[in-house]
Image (tube, rainbow, N blue to C red; front, side):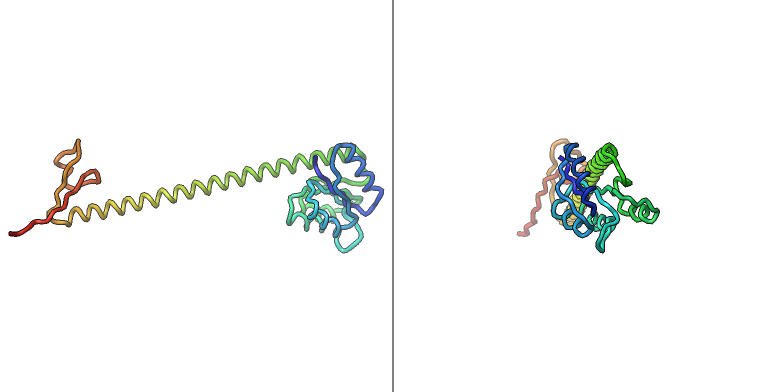
Length: 202
């Protein structure tokens, strides 16, 4: 059940919203009456959605409170306000709310905006999860490619040392493995078994 926090300094509006949401089977986890309380309760309760008034008493209005909450949480924000002035709308855009409802409102409007906001939030979280999974997969592939390149370099270095050794040690005899020809003895590959011996003087 989605968990919702109501923030409004008007007790009547808070009660009305709570009744609407409860009737729609949402869990109202709490209510705050100013921006400071909203931040504290949001961090403590971690709701899925906050219905936030904008103009409230205190040093922190609803938009500033929403900005503070969004810095540490992926909680969805829907503003419910009686102010539609361009100044408020432009400030609200920065928070990227999932809704902006003008007072007075009705039950159908609240239900619709809440349902859409929760759906959008769910989709955003799923997209973030897919993005993180793709990033992890890409990182794993990069690490695997780097490991293979390291092995290839080590093999090339080992082969180079082997060829240098076989070319510079006097008295080295090579015993061919099956399916080899005489020309294979010019620069012995790894498939040859080498026998190094010393010449003794009597």
